[in-house]
Image (tube, rainbow, N blue to C red; front, top):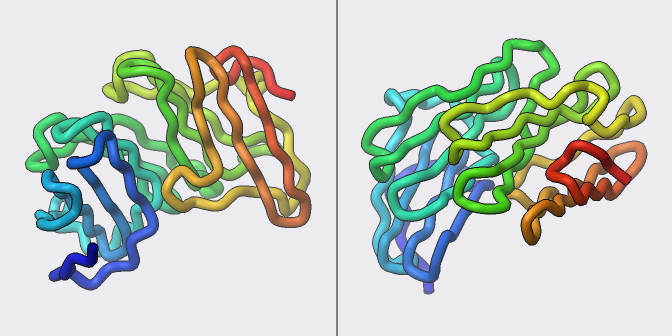
Length: 188
């Protein structure tokens, strides 16, 4: 069913933790949340920022979600009250920082990846539901060739499964499918 959207945005991120709760995020800083399967939406911005472009979004439920902007500085914002307030829980000022997607194995453990920095995919992880994020060591980050990157659109290139599997797809001058069975510590 279609819904009227009262904001001007290109939405590229969506997360549905269940059949009734849906979150979307996109350009011009807009984030939306529906509690009735997409019939009605509430839209808001983080700090009235109309310049952010959100393409990474992961919602755990109707109250808890994370969003990440494109480009540098790479920021991850987290809400625990349905979007009324947001906290910056990660910041990376590297000029090549660009976050592409997020996945969680359970309520506490998740991973976010991004375009390469220094020839390796950017990887950060959480063990506390997204309150804090820690970079993976370079030795645990998949190596890519120059011109290989990924696509930032609603977790379409990352998937966590079971208790420890994760897949990440890249594209560009070469396409790769990376797989880890230990939450991103080693990759095939």
